[in-house]
Length: 356
Image 1 (cartoon, rainbow, N blue to C red):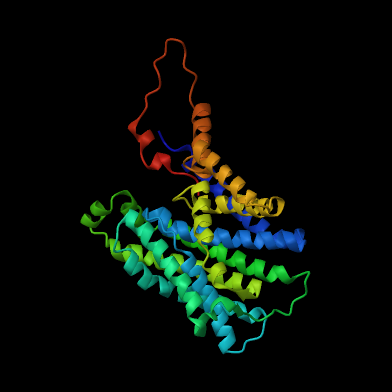
Image 2 (image 1 turned 90 degrees about the horizontal axis):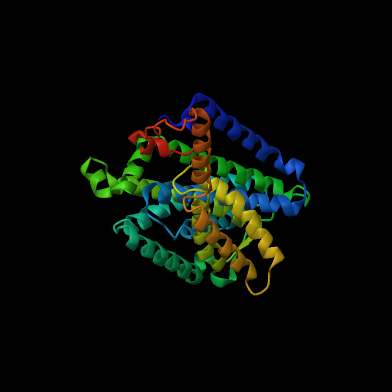
């Protein structure tokens, strides 16, 4: 049976929905002008980019990385050091350094990935955690580059308070769109097929000619590029950075949870997860700020989702929509009619594809 969501009508609907979402994102700061709202929206977009970048490697390859804060911190400190050494003043021109910060973080990902990816999946998780703590300790001790626990200051933008967040929101939106577009392009390329083959069976993929080490390392570096840009924008927005903030273990856990919630290995899953979790996390933190109650409620909510939507929001909704469409398209069986033939194609990978 053909996939009802693969018809031209539904493909056009997905394209139209993506276009409307982009228009809504562009118009958002002009409609909601409250600085508190635009601040939450800006951080949400940064998490959209970071989670999509994490999913580009971990979701497609099956290697769960818990050290992406290395890239986040590398991009933040790169921007801070360049601004200090060049004696730059605050302004829009600082944003021109954001892609360079991402490039630097991507280059950092090459030796880090070369070391970590020499192991297999379960060991890889432990290695990425270990590398994260190594970088965090280096940030405390390399005073010439990070100023240690004293932190580093960045130039102050000369913008008015009413429009201060809009510049950062625009930069975050560009990074988020780039991350989603890159994830979409990789998912539909031969490079993406190689990553999915590694996720399904790495030994077999290698036997079929996939250069697994190069493919994994390239995806790891791409993840670092996007995450490093997010770190640079965050550093510029806050105006000061410290080792425990830019190298934060909670960041690694959060972007992974967002991808799992939305749908691991899909293009739209991390986007949905970030749009749901980051505003909710901000609200819970403000509403329940004592004794870590916000973290407890956040964790309980995630457990409920994992219990009732184990594949994530996007795949679960896609399955439900397929069931509804197929039920409406099938004739009603009479009392003496045999049950409909269940083709093996119904259980093929193509039939399980979700809208992206």
